[in-house]
Length: 106
Image 1 (cartoon, helix red, strand yellow):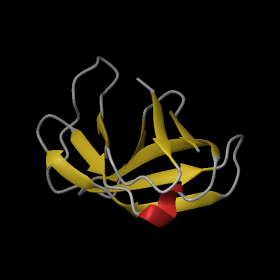
Image 2: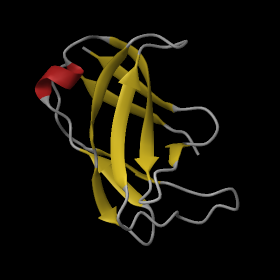
Image 3: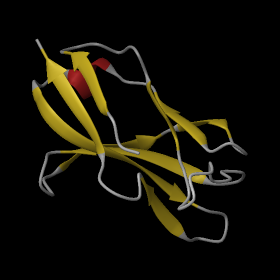
């Protein structure tokens, strides 16, 4: 499920962490998968961040992205997703419906 995540300009904490869930709500298996964190401007705008995320618990589907100060230097509202490339080469985006809402404030 998508959530709203708020940071102030220049913040690098807290990290954004999510359980990447399948259609029945179980965490997907991220063993041997690559996970990217992507943040973009709303309504299909430009991708501003496309960087590797850390897999915290592969069998439970937990991934985390640690912010850099340059990631949060612009006020605004953004959309974020975790993009998984499985060992088979298949690609899946999480959350499956919607996106995480990122709000960067003063």
